[in-house]
Amino acid sequence: MHNRIKELRAKDNLTQDDLARMVQVRRETIVFLEQGKYNPSLKLAHDIAMVFRLKIEELFIFDEEGIRS
Image (tube, rainbow, N blue to C red):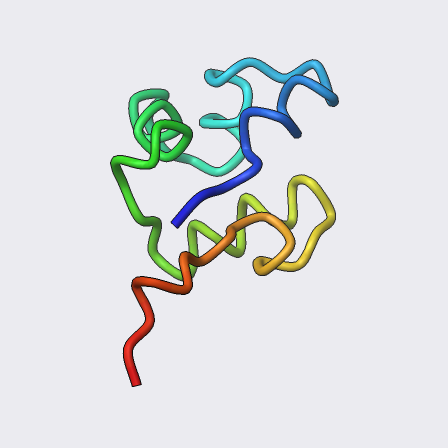
């Protein structure tokens, strides 16, 4: 799963620490999210999406390869 967190943070002039405080997680969590090393809980994905006024699916891009039928 990929995401647009870094891009959107830069656009809004937010640091990783700023965003972390806004969604009540550690800065390291934001670092790992941006690097694609951590998949957020639904609540965290929702909270981050709310910060940027987006839908979750506009913020997080799911890899089609990871979806199996």
